[in-house]
Length: 512
Image (cartoon, rainbow, N blue to C red; front, top):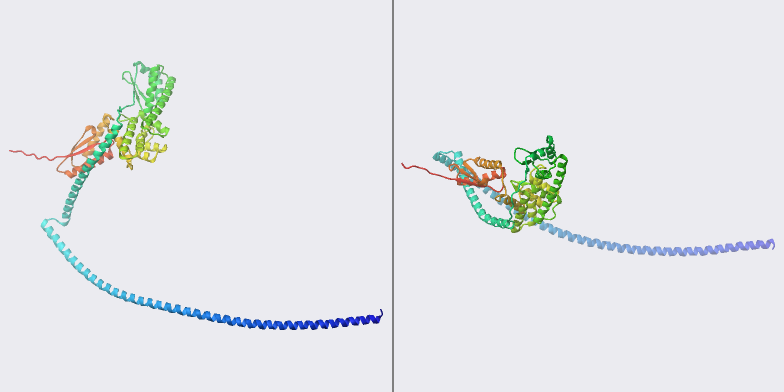
């Protein structure tokens, strides 16, 4: 191909390219114009639709505002009507209050006038009263204080007389009813547990086969008697009493061990420190065994279960303890039966009454070793060995150390008094007995108006003779109660003491 052809080809190609470009441009311009027209139509349509919606929204808003305005106007009218009604009611109330205030002011004026009238009448009355008092003082010859003192004295005498009569009436009625019922209950209880309890005492005298045995008991330079006293803790008194040795000591169990040891030594015949120690240990084991057996026997006899082994052992120790010559273990068993039987009659708890009755004197088993009263010691022991609170209370109340709060506590207290007050149950030393009688008479004679007193019936009754010119009949009743209170608070005594106040008036004259 030559250059001319190549040039023609290039020119043709350029022309074809330019024609294609021009054609494509025309086509594009046509599409653009078509699109612009379409866009204008869409915008115009959108503007028309937006205007229509705007108008609709404005109309809806106007309608809603109109509706709300109508609702608001109706609400305002309703509230105005209510306010008008309330205003009318307030006006009515104010008018009523004004009328009431006027009425109150009138009443106040009337009351003030009445107060003035009352004050005037009171002044007149006081003046009349003062004049009457002056006239009475002039007529009677007594001033106001003297007349008041006389009146008070008369009133006091009348009240004392009425009080004494009421006390006598109540006591008589209570005595009639109470004595009858109590007599029946106690009689039945005693009949059910009737037993012969011989008052036992701890043996403190050991009989010897001959007086030569005294020297053997003393030993060379007193070594045997010193060994016995050191080991047992008991004093041996060897005096001029023929064929007898006296054992002295506060602990009844130790004294019993010493007695048994000495009897074994006398029976064996060999008395020296080594043999004394051997017999002491043997006697001690025997007594411990006896104590356990006696405690178990007491619980078995009363039918009480679940007692702590240590309390059972302490019960056994009471076999060697006496009170006014009465064996404390026998006494405890008797109290248990009496309290249980009375509880059955009264509908109380017989098991509790029996258990508390058996343990009420448990403190006496160790009262030689522990400080305090046997009541406090017994409560501590019962509390230590897990006895119930009711049992502990019965123990504490059986001597009146605390006020009994249960019927079982009262029954244990009564059963203790019954067992102790039984004829022949107890005995006292002559010295203690005389002191008790003197104390009774001293208490009675310490009251003003007492002429003489006599303790009789072995201290179970005291009779007081009063001066009739100083003590009247009501006064004698009050005096007997006062003496009873003093005796209960200041003395210790078994059973009960009867207080009898006697007032006698005698008129003596002579015919000449």
